[in-house]
Image (cartoon, chains in turn blue, cyan):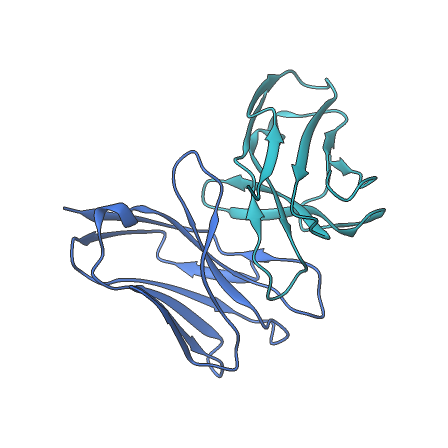
Length: 112
Length: 113
């Protein structure tokens, strides 16, 4: 059973537009929600992460929105650029558990 | 430079021939993990280790073994590889589990014929 469900599977956005990727989880013990960015031929790299005690975290053009009651979180990429074209993974883990759970990934293409 | 290294980067083998993929980190991290990445399935955790001599199964451990004899190394062993283990494998390390950034290696592309 997929612990973290991610959508959409793929996304095409015009340069300058907003990219939005959504994730949902069931396990209320999760308390750390990172997003990873992966370019072809590379390993994933941490982009931004959030804890459930805040509803939003912003770093540059990247924002995580977190809805604890709905058990959902999303990544917003403002002013999307062709260099943002990559695969994005959401993930979740907890202090009481020892595992990381990843979503199935979203392939983002930003068209110039 | 803080990094996780994996070897080999590419490997083609045949069914049943034992192989080992090495993983090493230079950050003195306690937590290390192996993932496999398959199209449409994302990253799935195979095994993880909380510290030296402490390992545990992830979501897809069947057909794999690991060991953690030293803090920096966490090899993945396939004693009798099968074609369904053809995948892209990543090793990762972090200070701890939750709230801690994972550093990923560059990946190992494995093909089992």
